[in-house]
Length: 416
Image (tube, rainbow, N blue to C red; front, side):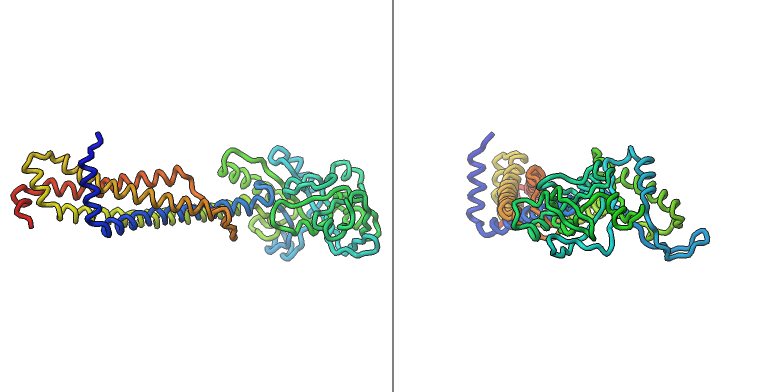
């Protein structure tokens, strides 16, 4: 039940000791403020890392060959591994159920791209239609490479928004225009863009993989294979599935190209989800560190509340003795001390919460540094932290209150 006299006593005590109460409140509020800001930046790091890996499909992986580093089956090290169409076909046939999209790339060498007698300094890449989804590209105009183009060795090309701006700025659309690649004429059928910040892909002109191999002496050679695995219910499940697929893929390629099982450099796989796992583990550790810093900062504030309550009990020892002499119950005295501790802790805690959440709301959306994006914190988590702080303040007030109850009436009345 609301006891107005008790609240009057609390406010009287606060008014008599304004500076002491304010400093104690600042100590508690700063603990909550620091904790929420640190947790916000921890979440901002996770947001930033997630944004970095969303530049391409989250479950994709890239495979490319390099040179062997270990002698194996009588073959010398430093052999250049060459992936071929049959490798891609065997993998896509045997592991068809394990992935959603698969693409391959061939990069013709020493080719010249010309448009209306102007030499264009862009790379050519032969591929199939699945690359658009794996690379997280969007179509601005027209269409992408399709199965019919690959099957019929079509002479069509897809350019980027960047190339459109730099070469075809005077045209309403580049669709239907023709470019010449080392003497072969290709019709532009689409314009693509990149969702991410990486513009390397926009330096490329894509043509059908079969056309690239046939027209530019590629035979059956390929430079890269790319796969996109299905997204599963949990991140751990995707990591497990990704690890299993990668292991099987490496075993097959090493066996086909006589690469030692322990040679980790001959065939390389760039795996965003494995990279993300390492980064998330790092951010998880950083967040735990932030929790630790914030926790001990809050503990420091709670200890200061407890110390202030001890001082209050010392100052009011004679008053407490008189109350006991007049028949005041022990829990009444405990409640008097604890109410003040809880009130100071709650006001300071919510003040720190409001300031920290307000700061994150105002400035968070504008924070865009490397691997930190939109620092924020779940309000439920922050609010729960304040509730725990209030509980801690209640405990902090209990011990001084218990000490007050144990004071003998005679000794209390003698106190000066």
